[in-house]
Length: 188
Figure: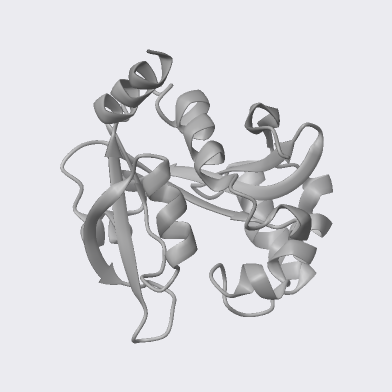
């Protein structure tokens, strides 16, 4: 049985990019994240820009104890004007994207624990962030259930930015006050 308290995060580093390349090219990751094979050169460019701060997302490895098992990134919605226009948040909001890349850890119930810990340690530790948004594909029912368990609720549906024309995102939201209240609830 997996122990959720062993979940932790480490800033993504250049040395991690071959692992990212491997994960991004697995069927279960491509189904919802990226959707097409990606070259090592593309991974090095895109994620290297994140690591070096040349692009917006703050990239992290999801680790189980010391074993890398997935990827998670965050960004301020306002830092991407096109995305901010599509989402129209009413407060300073952060976005999250993630996937489990290690085959032994998919569909093991860790998603909600990963999100809760990440929101507590990274997202809502930023005083200006008032809400957090996540936008799974409307067909990704497993992810939607995991996000609901983490406290996210449906907010709106929008066309998927980089997907096929018929693809839509099921945008979900949690406010800082809702998240903090859930933490208090779980300690009582």
